Image (tube, rainbow, N blue to C red; front, side, top):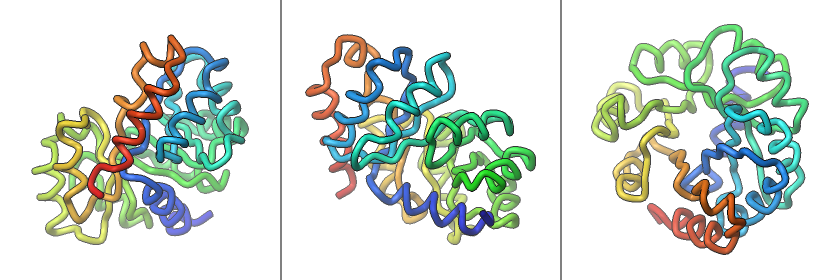
Length: 213
């Protein structure tokens, strides 16, 4: 897979809904119902972060949920990429980007949403062929004003801001012309996942799916 093909597929996935849930799941037995609730609420693209021992099992459990597209977040190494792809991930998300990570994603045919926080990082990724990026950490890097400023000289690059995005500030990002979607964790609160409040999570997802529309 070429970087251009990977970026086009990442853009297609990001365009499915205004919010991509960023999920930290401790218990794989809850994964399928969580995915079903989010998809039913209108959020089909799901990022499962590789931050728990259960993450790969969670991806595997979510991989065949009808209407869902599960991806692996917090990809850092080539081994992460291979493990995520083997578990059933359809896309990858990284906090940054290294040549080794991008090489692995391209070799595995895994569309990558590579992270950038500065104009220089974004330009380097663009030079490689990536024009759909993750802006991370969004709020700590200047928030929507910073992303708007980056977009002025680099209008050909689109972003999915993640990190500190909330219901209160999501529209400030989604209203920018260089933002396709945003990543948010608030649609799957740990307490709701723990108690199995799938109706509550579906309701949060439904509200998020209406943002910016």
